[in-house]
Length: 84
Image 1: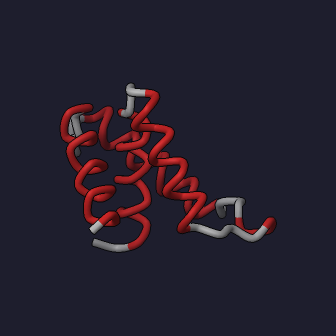
Image 2 (image 1 turned 30 degrees about the vertical axis):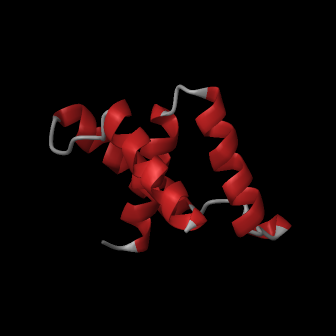
Image 3 (image 1 turned 60 degrees about the horizontal axis):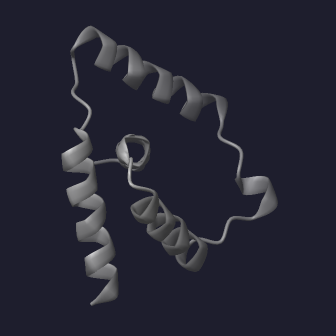
């Protein structure tokens, strides 16, 4: 899986989070693990176009986003793995 696809998958999983506690744990994880320089926060036109294409593929039924349950399970697995 390439880095762009991984980013899209993570974005899908974040959008699926409905539990505020889980979302706070994800935020805390990113604050601890990811340091973003001020000028690194912007996405490129290419990244935006690719994300829009992924959304269009989803709308056409060519790809399937993860369900809320699948996303939550994956995020929990990532958080548990980080804690071990």
